Image 1 (cartoon, rainbow over the protein chains, first blue to last red):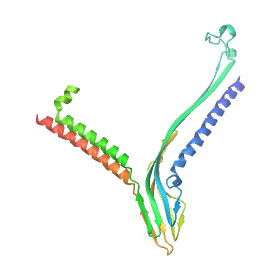
Image 2 (cartoon, helix red, strand yellow):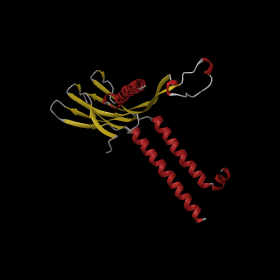
Image 3 (cartoon, helix red, strand yellow):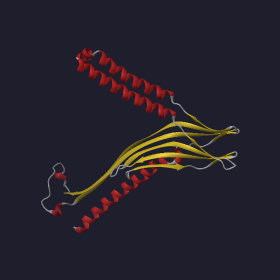
Length: 161
Length: 95
């Protein structure tokens, strides 16, 4: 009986360890996003000019894993549909286990600036994302205008509520 | 700074371009929540160090204009909404 228990614990430990290994590998790959190589791209040489692109990288990730192991009564063909509990410990002949895991993440990257090295000197040119700025400006002004509209017409705002 | 928050500036590989050597620097913010598998990484260009053949060293900051404008717009939005709320409360109190 004690041997069976040990076997069960060992199985569970194996499942846990393999899940943990997988998690460690994934986390290791994820931490690569914090490397300086992900921020600065490969230099591009054009004549005497060298261009180094740079980007802002934002990565977020979460995952989890779980496992379980249990023993139960091995049901005969006539008892398959009934969940009958065992009367004695010896009747617990069936065993099983399982594990599962899942996770999700996202890596966002946006060009930030370009380093230009030419015979005239070194300069850093910013990359301006007009679309993103325009969207943010529209959202901010929309909120402010919406609030102003409610303030100017409090009765109408109350009716709407 | 708490242990689960790490902020560091790391140098990259030095690039030789003509007479100058360029070393890029990146700033990263890593948040690992204790007891939680996962985290957050924000990595961005910080500056470049330019070393000329005669030994002169110059640091050029890498300015992310888009991010600055976005923060400015967020600030304007928050201030705008707060001021509208304050004015509307004052108006209600006067009535």
